[in-house]
Length: 111
Image (cartoon, rainbow, N blue to C red; front, side, top):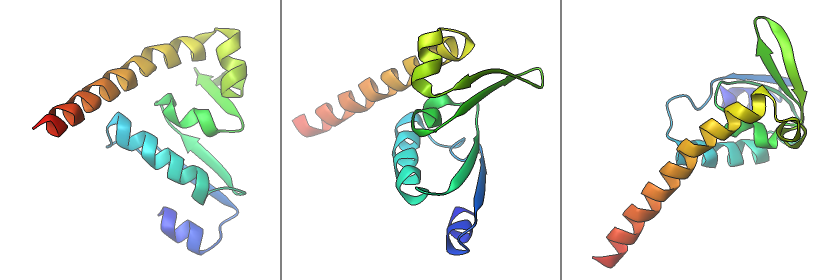
């Protein structure tokens, strides 16, 4: 779908859980590629995973059908509200995955 939207030069691209089937490391890599491919386009990401938010211009945290918090990643982290709390919890999984991946690479290199 993304390739089709890019080919057609769509003015708005909506991505609903685009990395739901990926692990944390693959997800990070995909979002870095999205950043390059989608530069200058309007993109709406819908996600419960907050890894995608670091490169978004504006984040809306929805709860109960209402906007609960909004801002950039940095602004929301400074507010230390619900977004901050969820990001902290989720970031632990990414750190664990990086440590596991690093350990596997070290083990493979040592053989």
